[in-house]
Length: 418
Image (cartoon, rainbow, N blue to C red; front, top):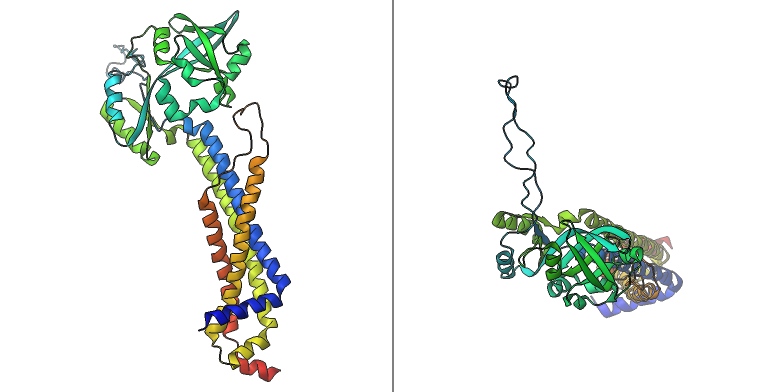
């Protein structure tokens, strides 16, 4: 089999039907370009949403949940129900939310090779006071360096720096809270804890997540300042946040830490199951639409090659009469489809990148997402590899059936018919 000769014949046949060839190649180009653009945009959108919520969630969170007392008195039995009254519904024990021996647990977790880092945290409800305005909210006491490393909190700051929390009696408040209380960077705000402790804090930054319920109530301060507000000791911590190298192990590690430390735990998949489902559905839709476009382009190639066989019966008969085998003829038509697939695929990659770049440059400004300036696009090289691979597979299959038909043409019948 002379592959060079077969390739030359295939190119000659393509030139003979140049218009149809271009149409087929354009179909593949359009399919690949739309596939890459759609998948890149959808995954970019998923990344944006994950950044807003999922990436700000610890992979495993350790805390103390308020629970009913486990040792309830026995239920009223039939034997004594008319003569004896039993106490029931014992209220939850007031053990508090503090994690006992928290420093030792954090030290142990930091030695675990499966863990990127650990960020201790205090979460407590408070009242924010500014003049006559009083709003209920939440203060998050954090260690600045670990929190920034694991959750990139500074990405959502519209004013100030996260490092400013290292100053004594400082606080970063949500944008919605700042707007309601008419506060700007540098103002003072009074915070009242649930126990009645009052503290005056300086606003060193304003943060906006883009979720109104969070921006209207949340704030950040240093771990030391939060402990002072609550009147607690320096080892008082309510949450231990853990980030893992392999997030898929989060459910198993949550169970392991629960058993080991006798603490309540929750993994990020359980905490954000709705967001995970939404991201998965959007990805499936984008891949499905892109694949459908490529399949439609494959049918176009099939139709063009099929028509070419009927129009080139004489040429096929002559090729077979001059010594070309059915296998040679089959490879000629497979080569036709591969040339269309490779050419259309390469141009599809180029146009897919161009379209993605255009979308990426379109301004996307909204008050709820101040850190997002353009529409999100994911330029993952895997999308381009999947696109060109599927294009080659589709065009090869589309050309295979006409190629098999061409290889079975009997030259004697064709010439005799003429």
